[in-house]
Image (cartoon, rainbow, N blue to C red; front, top):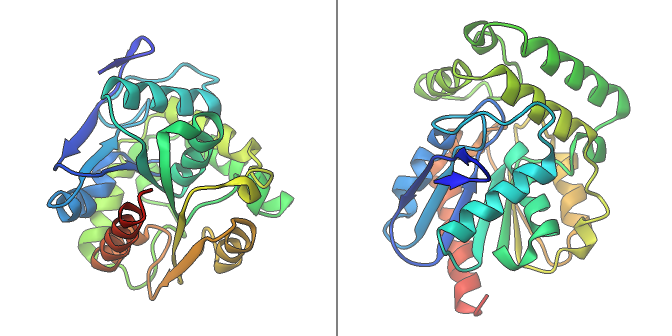
Length: 263
């Protein structure tokens, strides 16, 4: 679809209440393969390639978090979708929060997985500086070289096929996309938003997540009124791929409950 002057690619499957899936950095809609297949029997499932990933056109340098959220809003408007259950993993969770801040009418519920209130809002200052610097350095490297060194994304228990799947997505990373995302998430602090989230919220976290540890999950749980926290045993940062059956089952049960309550 043509959105704000650029082509945005997406996957859409199934029929029923709408679930929108937002992938993490150095990734694309392929990251949601298990959920696209696992939820299509009961739901309309939409997974986009954000600008600069997959089949979507590149963003301009300086594309901001607000720009990503407004682009997503325009895509959902173009698809003429009702308020959706919006799920975001890692950076995708930061984007889900910003969509709610800027376009709350689009969001029926939130599913925030292994994410942050922005790096600035969830990590120590020194860690934020280190991550931003490392990300900007990586953006100058060949994508294949980035794919060979990405510590902390998966747990030691990750199956070999998942490791290869993640590596293949990282190998398609585009420099402008990585720079924009790193700058956006590095400067972001969404802690002010969390107590004001007024839609049902599910927090899904791998208990072996080294990138966004359990302490971050617990801070979200304490800050978001009525939120539910589920820890997935043995899963790392990309919990939807490491534990797809559990992840998908939790999403299904949560969305069913929301729909039953008329959310």
